[in-house]
Each structure stands twice: as C-alpha cells, then as structure tokens.
Image 1 (tube, rainbow, N blue to C red):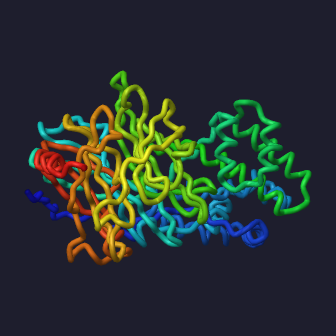
Image 2 (cartoon, rainbow, N blue to C red; image 1 turned 90 degrees about the vertical axis):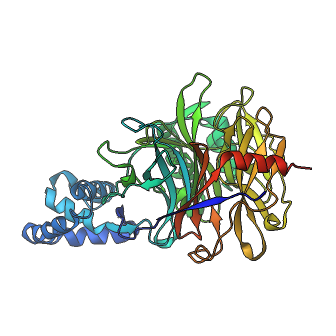
Amino acid sequence: MRLSIERKPIRINPDSKRVIARFFFNGNDRAKEVIERVMSITEEVAFGIISPLLQEYSKRHRNITRVLDRHCAKLKPLFGDLDIDFKSLTEYRKLLIGSYFTHEYSIESAAFFNPSIVSDPDQTELQEGNRRVIISFRAVGEGHISSITFRRALIDQNNNITVLPSGSYIDEAEIIRNAVYNRKLFFQKAAVTQINIDVLKELETKLDAHFEYSNLRRVILDSQNLKESQTEKIEYDKVLWLADSYYEIVFSLDTDISDRVIFPISEYERKGIEDARFVEFRGEDGSLVYYATYTAYDGALIMPKLLQTNDFYHFKMMPLYGAGAQNKNLALFPRKINGKFAMISRIDGCNNYIMYSDKINIWEKPLLLQQPKFTWEFIQIGNCGSPVETEHGWIVITHGVGPMRRYVLGASLLKLDDPTIEIGRLKEPLLIPNNDEREGYVPNVLYSCGSLIHNGKLIIPYGISDSSTAFAVVDLEELITKLKEDEVE
C-alpha cells in the first residue's frame, strides 16, 4: 500500500519589503560623536532634515515617531556623559537623533521556512467545518539572523487552505523584565554556558534563594566596579546576558498577527531564534495554553528555550534546564501523560529521545526513543514538531537526513499511554523534495515544525529548501493503517 500525498498548490513566499525599524548602535564613542554633531546644528536645520524623513517613513512603519523617540531614549546615559540635559531637547531634535540610530531590517530577505501550525484562539463566525489557524515561520534576514513571524490562514471543510495576506507594517513588542529567578536553577544553567566558574560562585553567595533582575544587576555592577580587567568584567556581563533570556513581550492590540515579529532580544539570542515548535497544550482542567520550544543561538552556544502565550499578543520566554534540555529539536506533547509533561528531544544531534517532567521547564533523564534505521535517515533522525494525538497512538512526523544531506519527512506511531514504545515507523519517506522543491537557500531540504488534524486529514506545512513554505495533506486513516503495517521489529 502506497500513501497518496496531496501537495497543495499554494506557496507562502518571503517578502523582502517587510522591514522593521531596528535600533542601531556602534559603541559609546561613535555614538557620542554622532550626538555631538546633531547637537551642533540649528533647530531650523534639524527640523528641515527630520520633517521629510517622517513623511517618507510613516508610509513604511506604524508610528515611526514613537520608534525614533524610543531609540533616542536608549541613549540617555550618553547625554549625561556629554553634559547635555536630555529633558531640554526639543521633540524634533530627539526624533532626528533617534533616526541616526535606526536602520531598516528586512526580516525575510534571506530565507523563510520551518513552519509550525496551531488553531487560532479565535474560531468565531466560521462556517461549520472551517478552521482558522496560525502558522509560525523562521524568517532569516541580513547577517543570517533568525526571528519568528506569523501568518493567519483558513482551512475549509474540504481542506482547501487560504493564507490571508500579510500586513504592510511590522511591529516590535514592548519588553518586560520582571521575572523572579530561582537561584539554584539559574546558576545550574549558567554553569553550562562557559561563564567563569569563580564568578558564578561569587555571585551565587550574594543572592537570595529567589531574586529579581534588579537585584542581580546591582550585585553584578558592584562586583564589576572592583575589577580592573576588561576580560573579568565581561564574565559578569555574561551572567546578566543570561538573566536577559527571561523576559516577557507584549504587542499592541491594534496589530495583525502578521505584523508581530519576535526578534532576538537577549545577548544569548543575538544570532537568532530558530525553529519554533508551537503546540496547543490542554491542561488537566481543560484549559488551553500555547507553548513553543525554540533554539536561541549567540553564534557559539545553543540554548533551548520555551515560549508561552494565551493570545499571541503577550509572550513569556524562559530557558529550559536539565540534561535533556540540550541541543535542538525539543517538541512538547500537547497534554500531560500519566500526570507528567512529556517531551521529545534530540540531545546528541542524531537520535530521538523522550523524557518526562513534573515541571515544564526542567528536563532530566532522557530515554532513547528512535535511532536511524533506514538509508534515508542514516545521518540523523529528529522530530518535525509536537506529536499529534489520535485514538490509535501519537503520530510523530520525523525528518531524516540521508546521502547528499537530503532532508525528507517520515512518520512514526507511538503508543498512546506509553510513548516510549514505537508501534510503527514508515519504511519509506512520507515526503521527499521534488524537482520544484530542490532549489533554494539550502537545497534538497524539506522540514516542518508542526502539523494538525482537520476533517480526517493530517495537514503538514513544510519548508522548501529554506526558501518558501508549502502544504501537504495526508489521509489520516491511510497513514495510520500504513504505520501499523510497518510495525517496528
């Protein structure tokens, strides 16, 4: 029996015109020089420069004056160093200074791929059999920096997919840092980030069992002031960078989902946030919350993190801890199993593991679940998003890497009440790159970060060679029958 796979004739392509106004900073000394030059011109000249800029860029950004004003405010400490009274500046001069520290960044200019899909929290005013969904993507721009972007789509009763047009404006969220840190867990995480161990021991003795960001910052500044070596001071900065990995972001309520971009914020994310695997998680009391595991990358270290939201306006971010929270490819099950959270991971970069936890952010004792078995996955096997629940077991869409680094999609079936047991695994790939999908930013790659079931079909959005995204539809009954036929020996 061969599975019939329907590739939907729809592509979601990157849009290089979707730009965000980012803060640009090139060091204190250079910044001070620019500020002094702007301060040297007359108010009339300043107005003559900023006025046409505001008219031009107001067509490209929502409330550009708010953006420029915010970027100017980030420079307040430098104004003090220059003996300039920040409060005495006119509004137009503040906006002009802000403009010199702002640049447009095209978030999708390099690549657009690795989609994940979940039901939209809003399912009102729909015809029977229709469903709104939110699709997340890994978007890559200049400097190979990854961010998370979104699109909204509608799946009708016949599983036709309509992706709604993206908005013209992209908005950054307001950042909130009000976390209370658990000292034991915080310094456990710090120990694996290559921060000087003596610095960690010193700071740990100066903090309470639970502490706030402001407490940590004060302790770090006090310790740094006692050091003369710039190298030593940087080690203290690294601890603060780790603390910055805990944060909340809030988007304006007047933004469309496609306008919201989750851009790297902390130092440990500065090279990108990658491959978000969103899942609609149902609590034991029936409540719903959306989680996403993702990878933060600073250019050298990988940090698995967890995102939480109820409405896709307000997001909480935090690192994941434990021996199982290593490497990439963490995917959370959509509910607890036998009273515990469950997660699939690929801690060694080659095999799939499974682990259980009483706490959603602490993952220990990973158990080997799957190893490469077939020729098309000899290099590695990993998951393509959270397992999908059916009455027959958990369907896990996998990715396998074979010769010529070709990525293909596979599928496995895990036992419902004990997913450490693999019931079946497809002997042949579920989906391979065809001639129209081989070329792109990274050739010969198909990859997904999440699927869902709708009207008896498994809907799989997948990235095409890191250049765009398409959809495949698989009959659920056929897939389960085939998985049971391909029983694991």
